[in-house]
Amino acid sequence: MYLPRLTLLCGLILLVHFCSHSQAEDRRLKTRSRGRCDGVCKSYTCGTVNRSGRVVGGTPTSAGKYPWLVSLFYRGKLYCGATLINNRYLITAAHCVKRVNLNNVKIVLGSYNKTDVHEPSRQVRKVGTWWAHQLFDRRSYNNDIGIIMLNEEVEITKHVRPVCLPVSGDGNYTGLTGIVPGWGRLSENGYPSEVVHEVKVPIISNEECKKKKYRPSEITDNMMCAGYDEGKIDACQGDSGGPLLLDTGKNIEIIGVVSWGQGCARAKYPGVYTRLEKYMDFVNSKIYDQGCFCPPPN
Ligand SMILES: *[C@@H]1O[C@H](CO)[C@@H](O)[C@H](O)[C@H]1NC(C)=O
Ligand SMILES: *[C@@H]1O[C@H](CO)[C@@H](O)[C@H](O)[C@H]1NC(C)=O
Ligand SMILES: *[C@@H]1O[C@H](CO)[C@@H](O)[C@H](O)[C@H]1NC(C)=O
Image 1 (cartoon, rainbow, N blue to C red):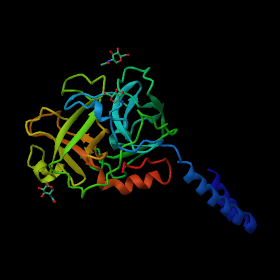
Image 2: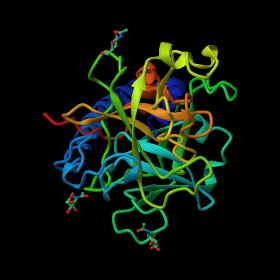
Image 3: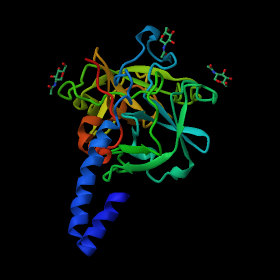
Image 4: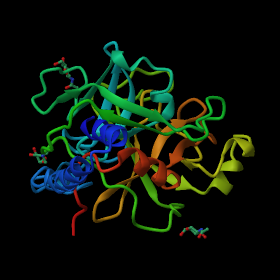
């Protein structure tokens, strides 16, 4: 807010001394903002979980197992998930932010039981700014990715920590197992879950996905499919906008965003995710130098 006004002043009245002085000020500001992240992450790295509390497949997780998992409430109702990537920014689905009155959205971080408002680990924020991908298409769900800047930074704690962005591998996740944590319905007509559940789903190639019951043109290169042939386990409504995670053995990366699917866990209809690696430029263009990233573990 301060800098553009100075630039305007310089342009208008050409105060040479004043302007060169303000440039020096700018450089100092930048240096200071780099130092601003010192100590923010404490000893926490991105994408590390509490392995001692591990539970497998379609079952409740332990509190704090996915500390980057964020819930978005609309007038008190959980309607989408999101993922913390640094102390100020979330990745979610475009359909979770576009045409939503974000003044009515409450963002809850560090939560495990969504109805327990007294959880001491919770941090609650509002939307500062948001961006849906400019090419998001509501009919095809192509480019279903959005970014939320929180109104205020979060404190990085044991229960509120960022995930790592995708770096490892060549973007070929075929045959690997994805993890989808969330509060979504446990079955197509079931109730949403009170506590965080996770499902583990095999990632299939787009080629293979097009051979399932979707029309081949529905599955674009910006999407990724995961699920069992016989259905049974899937991400479901309410998980939208949440992460598809990959455990690299060293840390956990977000590789996709829960986007769409036909029903839930129906045979031959795998879940469809936004392929995050396709959108790293979009993500980086929104984050500038704001927010502090925690480094991955060594
Ligand atoms: C990690 O797991 C252990 C054992 O289940 C538990 O005592 C501890 O509270 C957990 N920590 C977090 C951050 O969830
Ligand atoms: C979640 O929290 C609510 C409110 O405190 C409580 O009634 C409920 O039993 C909790 N659910 C679980 C599964 O712990
Ligand atoms: C991706 O990985 C799978 C499993 O390792 C392999 O079968 C497949 O050929 C790979 N695809 C490409 C395009 O490299």
